[in-house]
Length: 204
Figure 1: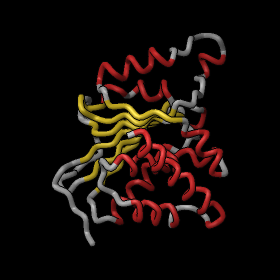
Figure 2: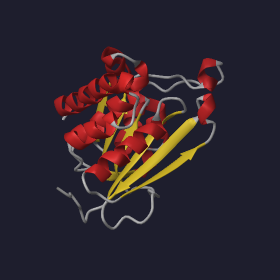
Figure 3: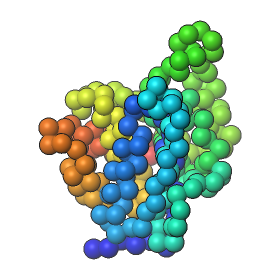
């Protein structure tokens, strides 16, 4: 059955090149289409192949005509890593939800000793300046437990679905996963997504 909404839902996804941010946006969009939603996807990435910052936007709703998410308008911000989350924190609405993986992936500047990584409390404090709604868990560990750390993006897909903001059904998300990856990776990715859904539901 078609599931069209007149309300626009804007999702911003922030991470590091190589974590699968772009793939997550594509699978999320496919899941939205499976449920009958209109959807637009945008991507902004610089040195993605070198571990640089990557951000994608996904906008869902029957009145959506473009992928741009302006500052203060995102219903959901998904961060693959703490610092990558706060890089795009200005996009979130004051009542928006932040889903953040707590697993740290140090930027090159930090690894080289040219910069310091902020503390957990500093990161949370920055997020709370913009919204009080934050769900935090170690998505990297969940992906590893599912069978591959490369399934991190599917853990985050599951988290998005579990949050219930997009209106996308679990069935459509699982179908999108099964039709997006080679069969040998199918069950790992489904397991990863399911663990992400459960993590968000437990934290909510």
